[in-house]
Length: 239
Image 1 (cartoon, one colour):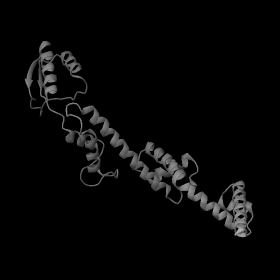
Image 2 (cartoon, rainbow, N blue to C red; image 1 turned 135 degrees about the vertical axis):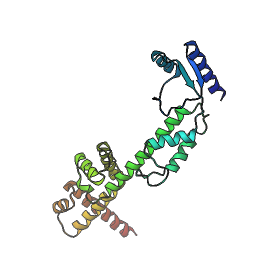
Image 3 (cartoon, rainbow, N blue to C red; image 1 turned 120 degrees about the vertical axis):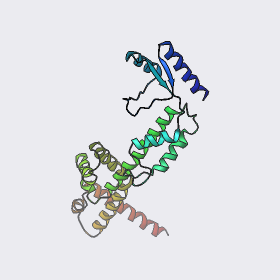
Image 4 (cartoon, rainbow, N blue to C red; image 1 turned 60 degrees about the horizontal axis):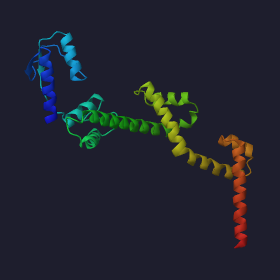
């Protein structure tokens, strides 16, 4: 509070040196045009001088962390009651932001508050898009979307309310999610199926076409299968 008082005093002194009349608190602004100012107070006084105003109203107010966080989140589209279309718990995110900035004093923490709040909101948005991408991967037609254009179009059809930029991001995330989480199991299942079909007398070329695999990969499965079988036979003979 002492630092804030010193800043207010410095503003008062500088304003008086420029010839302004200073009034404490704020006037009734119900029928008066107003504009918000973002920037340092010296620039504001320069602007006031250029506008040739006669008086300035000055009030000091400490930063209220809770109110500021709620304001930032509300501007980003979060609601603290009812349905949130972004699928993120607003109360949980609110508490998380406060936890990050709670160690800062109110009059020192505005920049850190904004930074942490924006970081938390960006993380929540990434989680939301990740959930949509995972939902897209599980769609039965996802494996048909072999190109980036097809995946982006698929995202636009599944999530029409999202922006074009988000459709591209969802498509990119879906591709990576499928590669990391789903493709290894799918590849293993295909290899097992290829071995089973070949053991039933199906030709490698036909297996490749049936499973949409390169014939060289089918031959690798068969070769691996033969080696495994041979090793198992030798092991049984030694026993």
